Image (cartoon, rainbow, N blue to C red; front, side, top):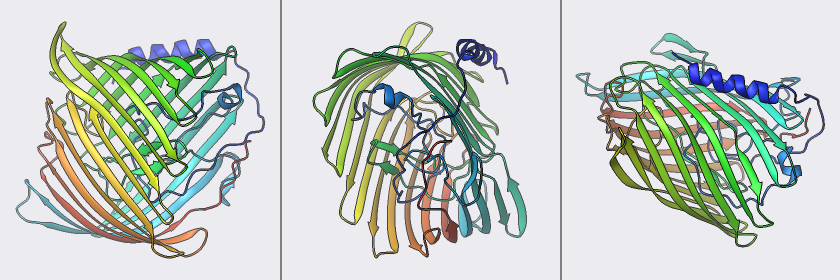
Length: 453
């Protein structure tokens, strides 16, 4: 693979920030909410509308936050796990038994498999002044119909730095790298929501062969116009590549985003946005210029209910001529009840998931979680995805149900059922159905300190 432009960006970034001293200090950081289920997927998601967080102050910019790869809340830091050596700790470990029934177009009958999965989440997390570097590593051991198969390559690495140049001006440097040795997703499909940040995270539920790699480096610049308003510019570069016989197996995109946000009140905000990216695809697809204009609104109706809405238009131009136009949008809703929660997201736009596409996609996900007793929780999820004006025109649907029983602060039992359907996914994604039933046990500390090293 070629890293010419990407390598140049990293060299420039290193020259810009080599003079920043690295030192240790003290930090307090909000703890993550207890997620209803966990999800596995790349960190980079389509841009969400303006959140309802207050405009950043100097104290905010000294606490870099990164999302835990298996959830929607922030990754905790400090003394997090009883199995910890300095900045390295074991975040979770689980053992699961699966029974899968797979129907696909390339096989004469339904294939039934029994899978055993051992999985762990190992985290390296180091905070120094206004920078933070993390690696979230997920080794797996699978035994499929008696055959052992290891996958020790799945990881998510992130580096984020924030610098306050003046009381009004701040700049940052962020880098996100994701690598997945397998594109198959066999567990925990439901959308996740974090009420404090308004973050919603979707899983990648389509199955395919081969690996997937994504990389995004960006330099966000934000300027406070006043107590209620700010403007921002984010130059970025994205790189995707996938193995197997995908119709499109790679892309690279330099681009930039610009936004304006205004706080109508402590619970309401509006904003405008513009983004442009120049995407060069591998294989025979032409280079495409994508431009998007957006208007967004967000509101927190109560401490337990918030939503955000973005509407816009996106165009795709080839050889200087506008060839494709479509509406874009993003709607997020999170509602917490006394003993249950509801999350919903609808997205429409140009986005790269585990299948690289030159077109657009519609996707919606809904999740409902309810506490059945002091120790037992239920979660139900449903989702749909479809590409259009694309070289692949993939579509998929899933439904899932999960029960978890908390044995102690660190141990829980989990059982789940899921059905997935996908079709016309190019040569890498087969048309077919997957059903699975699973039962397993998980170890994960529930009370995690957040003191800084």
